[in-house]
Image 1 (cartoon, rainbow, N blue to C red):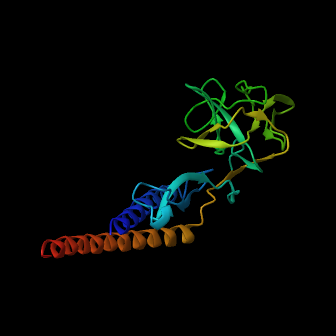
Image 2: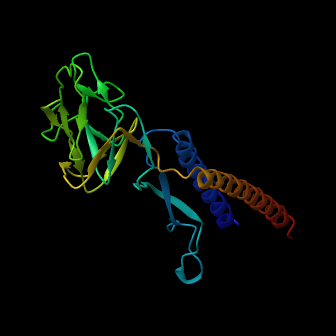
Image 3: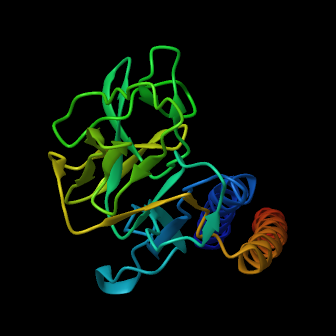
Length: 242
C-alpha cells in the first residue's frame, strides 16, 4: 500500500511540474524568438521501500528529470522595420547586459539615443568582434543588413552583427540564454532583415498537452485517496485481529 502511495504521489508531482512547464509555454505563445520547453520523464529510482522479494526493485512511478529546450525554428513574420532581424539557422545574437554577455533569438532591435544598436530592453547588440555596434546618422540613406550580419548605412559599413554558437544553451530568463561552455562566433547561419522569428510553439498541441496533464493529475489524486482509504481499512482490520 505504501508503494501505491509513492506511485500516486510521484504522478502528482510529475504532472504538476508538467502543467507549470506547459503553462509557461502558453504564456509565451506570442513572444518573439521563444523556444518551447519540454520535460524528460523516467522511471523513479529505488528508495528504501521499493524492494520486493529477493531484493528486486519494484517500480514506484516516474520522476521529472529535467526540462529541455526545443530549438526548432519558429515561423517568420515580415515587418516593415529595417532593424528587425531573424536568424535562419542555429545560433544566437549576443547581448551586452549588466551582468555580462547573454544571448537571445529575439531580433527586434532599434537605435538608442546614442545610435547604438540595442534590443527591446535597451541593451547593446554585440558585433562579431564582441563589441557594441554604433550606426552613423543615415541622413535619409537606407540601412541594409546583409545575410552575414553586416550593417551598412548608405555606402558605409557600421559593423557586423555577431551570431554565436555553443555546444548547448541554458535559459537565463527574459528570453536570454547562457552557453554551455564557451560561445563563439559562427558564420553558417544567415540573417534575414525585416523579419522576426516567432515562437516555435504548436498552440493546439500545447493546449491538448495541458488538458492531458491536468486529467492525469486528477487521476493521481484519486489514486492517492483510494490508497489512503485502503491503508486505513487495513489498519482497522489489523486492530480487530484476536
